[in-house]
Image (cartoon, rainbow, N blue to C red; front, side, top):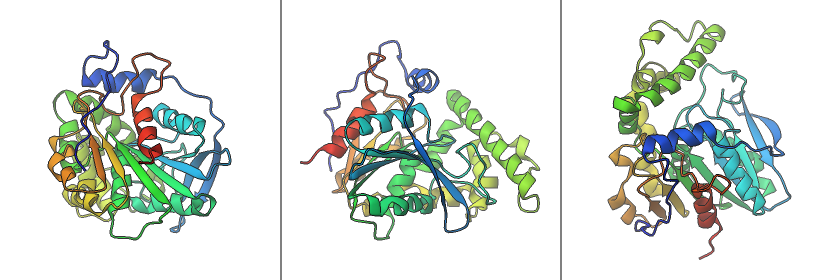
Length: 319
């Protein structure tokens, strides 16, 4: 599908660059007291996933997937869930392994291409709903698109998807976030990822070593030593090549919106593949000039975030 060009987003003037548009919503966005119901499900490999539901008896549900080192209760997750729930949808926000506040039980946790866990979530609720919609933020957006594009038959109940601030090309985006002024983001992620490795090494000392952990300075180095090999890949490059959703877009059969801001400090130029998008029937791309990473703040504090409005418009549109 052609690029959507009539983008209407314009954020608050005080957030005048991509860094402010990324950082301020992450630090100061209002939180919501929502009636989540937590449910723990067992995975086929003997681990567990923690799911949070907003249930109102709807036949439609939106499944929302968080980003790197996020969780199901992050303000951007709750905001999206709240908006859809208020419009008559049930909502499910879920946690990657090791992200719910309790470390998972296996000697690994999650990664950008771990679509088997998203499938576990979908299979858990599939008999309870007539229509299923998927929304993913950042790493969760990559996971969502890869899931839909894999050469596996997916349920016809899955109707549409939205991927927001998604690093379609993992390698170049990982390099970008670890250089220059963007290094502040990489250091923040590395701090919590390293802590996960320390905890895992206590439970699995024969499998996971912390030797050299403190010398790792970039996300690619971390992925090369830990994320890749821990999840069956040779190294970081092998992991990125096998898991970048850019290479799965051609297999997506349902209407799917990719919503990336051009000033997103996490995203490389390869995350704006306009020419490829023009050749794909099911893929819609919307690249506003501003918005930051998982930002898209409203002009007034009490208004709905623009990404939530756009996701709902896309999913709820019958045309």
